[in-house]
Image 1: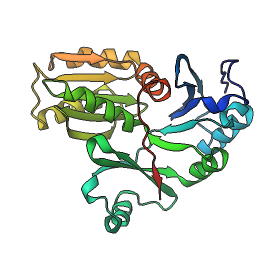
Image 2: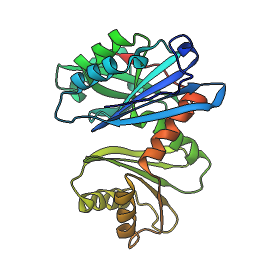
Image 3: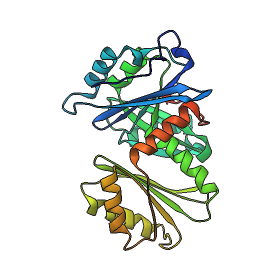
Length: 273
């Protein structure tokens, strides 16, 4: 496990930087930059040993790379937890919160994080391993957690406001596929599916497409995955759908991290329960 940062980033000037630590199955990235200097953005990635516990992996990384725990202007910890749900702001009230938590997160070892999505008038709830949450809270007291989907949903919503037709997005990572659909600013669908192969992906994408009664000629599907998966899946789906676009998953995540660091993406604080 090895990460590098620019020589210009030091413990004495780190408070001028915004950073992101992105966790995904089998890997991690560390990115950052100075908000007023777009050319300062950097992004480094490393693979991790999947046979070890996530907590031990984080501990080792922070011990080997002191710059991960420098004092920064802002630190995002982005994770792609399988247990998440989106609830309307209107029903996310004190008397309903505990009932929502019990229904969505059955295991007591989880810390529930509530991330407001004001543009969607919703709240994204997701569960974290309590030991990982506590380690980050002790190591980076000012860090806040985000779910991978949060900023993506906000970006897709903004695009949808300018579009004339519906747009479905699918993000494939490891053995999961997140699917969301917007139609002129309205979030019509979002869910995660467990997938083993291309047949599973095809089935869920076409099933959701049919259930939403999307137009195979005018509406759009964007696939984000590793290149081999995305282009193979596109080739198979072209029998059924006309407008299919491919966006490499690393490009998607780097663009998101750049926007949060030196762009105009506004970070909304999360609430831990």
